[in-house]
Length: 88
Image 1: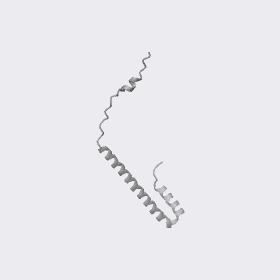
Image 2 (image 1 turned 135 degrees about the horizontal axis):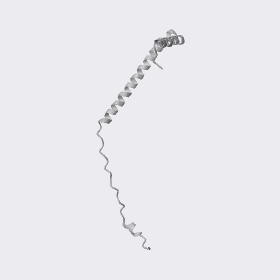
Image 3 (image 1 turned 60 degrees about the horizontal axis):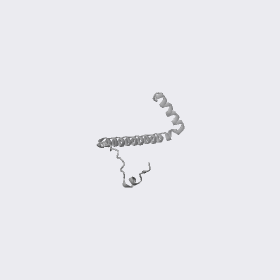
Image 4 (image 1 turned 180 degrees about the vertical axis):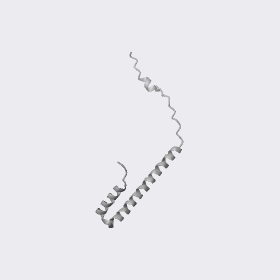
């Protein structure tokens, strides 16, 4: 599917003129233009915000690498030593 050319635009304009009439068509065009401008402004704001967040994240220093801790052996307590079975 290609882009809309001049003949297609003319057909759309004629259909819109028939449906909305010559009095409503300029008002409809103005509101459509305002809506598109608002959408463009909102999308630009979103893009700028995302780019700023990415820039802030990239400028943060990387955290130091985690040092793995050695496994700790369980410590025998006096209480555990008292319950040793000597019957064997």
